Length: 115
Image 1 (cartoon, rainbow, N blue to C red):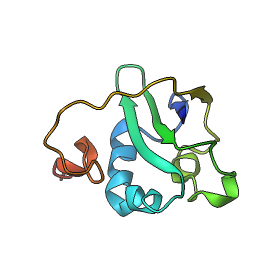
Image 2: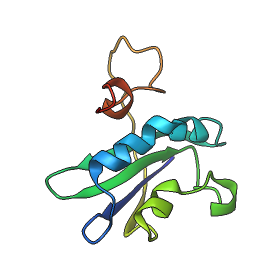
Image 3: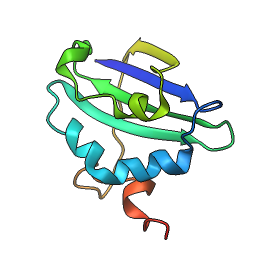
Image 4: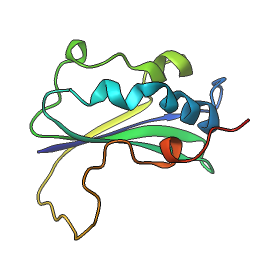
């Protein structure tokens, strides 16, 4: 397994955590639901640090960029990801929980859109 962390520093970009959160409501997560080898993708935000990114867990190596959905965050932010790191997963523990699936969860998808 591989874990990948990617994030942007939003300073100098017209995008904000709130605008990117709204972007997730447009079905972006669904675009990733059928990516072969992707175990999970978590979109992450650091409002205090003005950062936006994602954590992806892959069964094996990340596929070539051409095999992935378009990077809409990069399009909106106006530049490629600023930081990308990959790691080998040494062990995994899955705790007891009542969630049948993770798809569709998260603050961007569960909170009402601002008016």
